[in-house]
Image 1 (cartoon, rainbow, N blue to C red):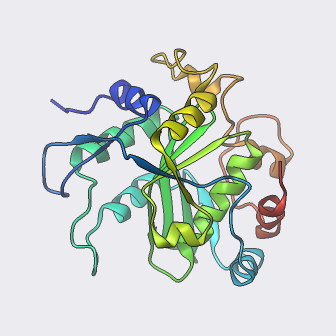
Image 2 (image 1 turned 90 degrees about the vertical axis):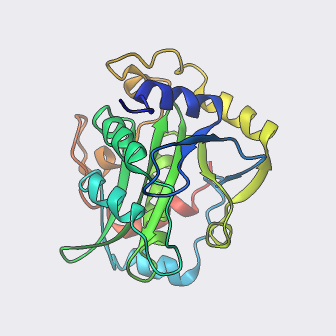
Image 3 (image 1 turned 60 degrees about the vertical axis):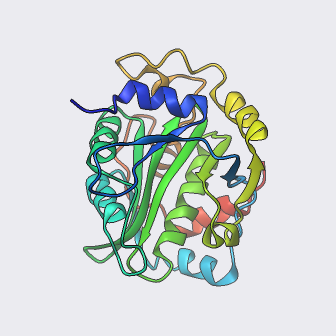
Length: 244
């Protein structure tokens, strides 16, 4: 029996905690609540000249939710300089389920037919909880994060939670805030949606929730649900320099 139930995980994120494991092979998980929380203000993404050039040139083909399992597996892999990861089998299973429920999403960067980077995380209300990024080509994770920020801005999200600060995230605009300040931001981002997360995943379609696919509908000019395809890099760059 899995320790992690999808509803338990959603409730944990809504309360400001998230699950981690000590290593890939361990069975147990524990709940983490950092005293200092890393967040990336959506109007504070640092778009360097070189990164903007890469995005506008569409160096990578960027998709959403087309290879969730592959991104999750890449993020869980041990690599040189990072022999252990915190994504164990239980976390992997529950996020697959949350993806099927419409809460967990991935952003993928492709070089031709080769998956070279991306990220995955959890959308709840107007908050997006970034879980992990991976890069197998220069700037792939940066491009994925840039696309995510643009998508969240277009979809009416208020909060991008990065969990722990790193020099990589800091270079892209992430800041650290106190736990109390984070909880206040989280409460505002979940206002009007938490409590409606029934078995049908009602929170994901609530009018009070962010729309993770608004950018795709705008790009396609279609009002109905669409499967995400590539959004032009110049559109992403424009969204990143717009302020609310």
